[in-house]
Image 1 (cartoon, rainbow, N blue to C red):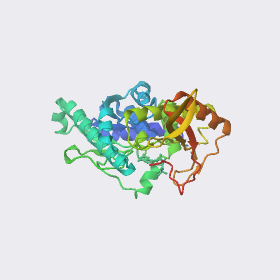
Image 2: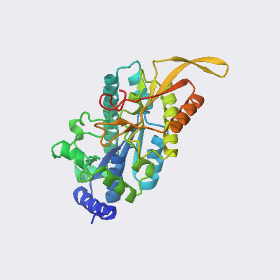
Image 3: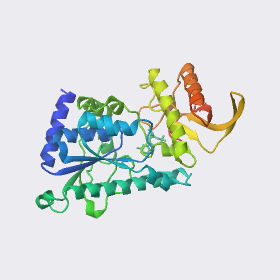
Image 4: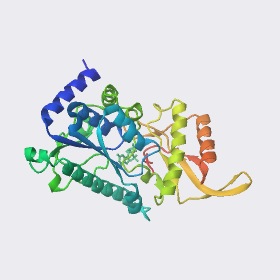
Length: 332
Ligand code: XMP
């Protein structure tokens, strides 16, 4: 019978058998899949695993801390955090085109991860290099799930960082073999395994969130100030949806800042000229199609009044009532 305990035991045995004494590297994104994959490998081979978290500054409020503190505390993984926030902001300066932003974020992510991987390799190149050759880190963990395996024809890859950006590969001098401990599991099973391993519930139950993060939820140029505005608005919307018990009804709820749009409002004694925030709550099975979620009016009202009261620069909250198709879930 399927129990998360049995599955963990089996997967841990498999990982140990494959990896032996080798070193392993894993990129953490803050999402469910990479976190559970990392926790499994950690359970199997302990500190032979090094995790790398690239903080690109495009995560939502509290999410970097969930990885850097809660996840580490719960699993004991050896974590390298790369603070690349400035680097991503500089690379995104002056760019408004959605595809351009996605390309830049994907490209920078790969570069930063590559450098971090080199550093990890170098850090372990001492005594171990003699035992294992010049490249002591042999394995790269990927959070590939069963549906991904089926979709891609079932083959096993070697060194592509598919992760959450679906771009590029590692350079020739950093060839890894892939270890994909979740490749027989469905999403709900991954969550059960994650709970079994003690991965924090905030991560296990996290709704889908795109790799390029808040960078594609600011319509217009991405700046530090705009990220701050969006982060506050998003935190309020998430808190109220959670408080209303809607997390399971809502597949995800992008919160979008229309940074290049202003509208007139009135607040206190004065006229305001601020930005709109868009709420995009959707219901879906697989994100291929979606319907806009009929969130109760009182919940919408609370989110709206809190955002306009608490977030400076925002004087209007609007609701996206478009299904997919024709709309996509994200605005960019
Ligand atoms: P769309 O906007 O295409 O989104 O309807 C479908 C689902 O995919 C997520 N999404 C992404 N996930 N990297 C990801 O890992 C991305 O670049 C990306 N773009 C969109 C989106 O949040 C939704 O769940």
